[in-house]
Image (cartoon, rainbow, N blue to C red; front, side, top):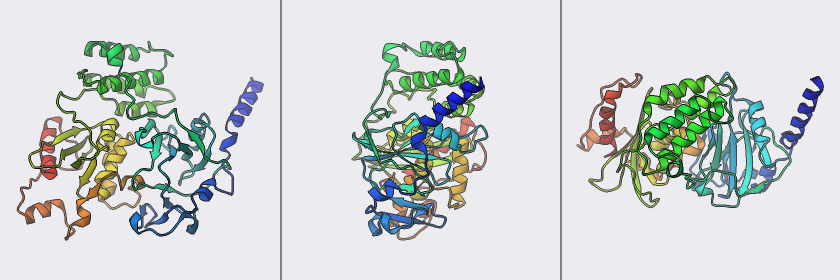
Length: 418
């Protein structure tokens, strides 16, 4: 038995050999020496300037300090942010998960526990899905987005080129057409998974199976279902996992237990402007939006899934003070954060915490009305000053909203969007 353990340990060490992050020379620093880069302000969590005003290059900076750098669109980063059973970021789990990927340049994240794998992608990075798996994100740097990094350990490899193996936004394997006939059949498949009758007959694979069939059914425009009554049972099942409870629960938080109502979906067009606003409560995330033009209806996304947010980001989004608030709320949901986590993020954003912001979230909107307002004041004050209809909600922001009042919150949000 001891000999077997020794052999396993040697095999594990060999598979991770390329992840010895002890090199003193960074291939990233060399390759992108001329790339525009800048330090942050405060604790370094925010870029200091707009990119149009930045004249410094990466070679001008001390890369052991937190900084931001513009990289080519073909350069992508796989961000491993897995946590241990106590909820702390786990270097061991991240190294273990990364060991199965193609060897490439790697470096630790700012904390020293997360892990970034750098690849050159020979496809269209704009078609990549941002979510690979719970705790593993695909970072794509299109538009004016930038990479936030702090060099505190890297390997001595260069960038490997890949062109497959990553999920695409357009990939929609519609189970409903071939397997799922109706809501009743979908319910039977979920209950079969809850009884662990799906190979390999363990909790995590069964949760993965439920996530896949619900996601595929949700993406099928001809499939209409409402299985929200099964959510508590699926959540309890996920929590029963001996080794993957946290990952399973994160997956449940992203499961679409209910299809969109007919007529809710709109044809995507990146050339169109969309005006949007978010409202956040402990149990409710509301994202309301409308196309530009007087009289166009307001769409309501109540507790949207990451996929819904990803689809919304295909448009040119316009918000009010969104670069300092709403963009970060959308980005958190895109990463799979649940309502409670997003509520805590909202509290930190409102409180002005410098550690609350995502560097990648600032430029996901097309523009921010607040940036070019002649007077810096709240949207409500503008509504009053300009004589525009305004509405007060009258609900405590720190308390859960009863489900029967969700429509009232949506109406309040409609008003701000309009």
